[in-house]
Image (cartoon, rainbow, N blue to C red; front, side, top):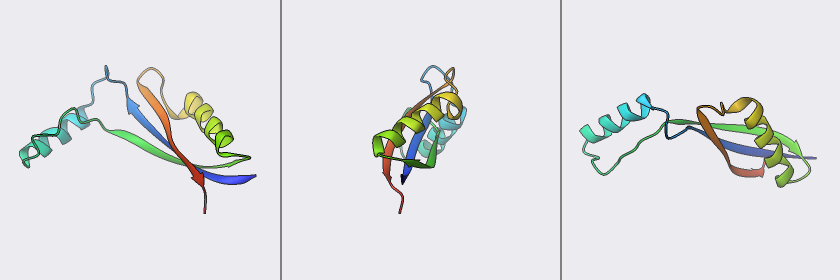
Length: 86
């Protein structure tokens, strides 16, 4: 087995309001960043997974996300990176 770092991005679904994202967007606009829009706030989770391959580590992280890490009613998730832990 090899240890892998697996990074998972969790975001609210587009239909779900994101007041924190809206507040950040307004603050950025007041600082002159008028070209930024549709700001959303999410979570980045890093897991250390013991697995035989990067594909196996990804599958474990996806199952963990489906069962616990992401709320399927309000959130989406995506495994964005799998790399050997050093």
